[in-house]
Image 1: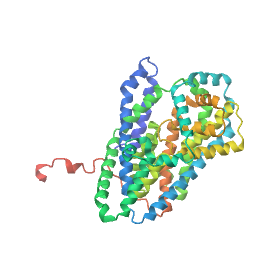
Image 2: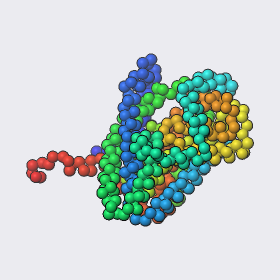
Image 3: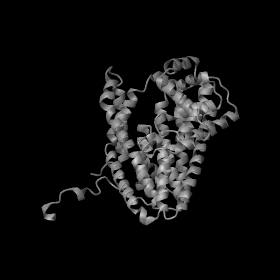
Image 4: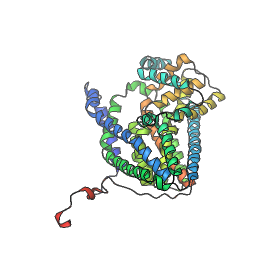
Length: 448
């Protein structure tokens, strides 16, 4: 019997997790049961993905750079990557602003709903922590993000998933210096990273075997902790505008893939669907990165020297889904609270959201920190910032899950665009977790 494809296994796990979560919301003990006995399996899965994220970046990026015969190739990859990421982010923010100004979801929010949301969430610890984090980031200078990219301790950077840009900087520096000392002297270190890369990719294969069970646990926990359904319904119009924008971004990516790279858009979406589904389940581009790299390299066929740079950088600076959400959320909050925005304010939203996406942590909830920075840039009243966040907090988690899907899809799209612009062919080489299993199993007597 033919084995069910991975994306179908994950999708079944997600559906069952949502159904199970809804069922467990009715018993008084259901929510606690899910958090105590089901959610840990999802948490372990996410921890395993985060565990291998930095070793994977380190090994694959060093391998990708050291495989280059001409150092100018790396410059070409880097310049193209940054330019394309900035272009897609501007497109995303523009789509968001066009939709929210056309549909005006904030005009339909009653004062009673605003008061209820404010009372429920304004003093929420997560909301206040996001405000504190945003103010801390805002205190830095205009070039703070460049300063933050350079680590003062490589081992500290390698031990913290939140310092992804520092890891990328160190790894690129290491890879370039390996090129500069010559192939003969760098060979022992290159062989080490080549082997490490193969081992980490095998770890990805093994971890993915548990993906259907993990997404079941993650989605069940999301459902039982989703909050007041009445408040969710009150924000349905706002959420609908964000979702529509995110769907349009997926359509945009599909058109780009089809027209620019001449790759079948449906096949593209099918190939990266396991990464998309995990992005939805974990709400983290960083946690999904190992799977994104595996799908793009092995199943789509992007060369490692391209994917190993484009995808880790994208997981950190490419926040198309998050940037679109910020545009919608900033205007929605302004509409709901009667704060008029001029054309200059809306252009400032585009610029600030673009800059805020650089260096933003690729973790759940980072979008709200970026949103505070955007609202501050348009001179939104400081005493209403907590109220503004409270307005959208109820639906932030499900929207965070959806916008992470867009972020990951954008990363994969840009890697294909960079590959095409450099004239590279897509050569898929799919590997399974048990490819070398026969080499470590005991041989039968008649084979000895």
